Length: 83
Image (spheres, rainbow, N blue to C red):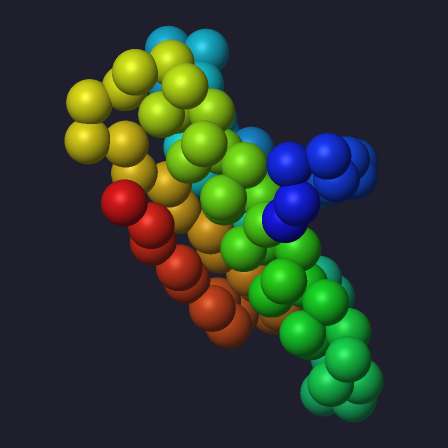
């Protein structure tokens, strides 16, 4: 994302430790006919949220920062980890 880009991302769940976010989750109803563009949208949104969280941890000088993103759609459909 460009430095001057600002967008409000509101995840369904954010877990924090010591006041800093480290896990994000998107939760969707279990459906078999979800359009592919919406699945990609959730994945991209989750990855952007993870990058913002990782940047924030780095700014706060957290040693070995690590964030986790999870997408639920009736079951866990994707898990991403970033260090």
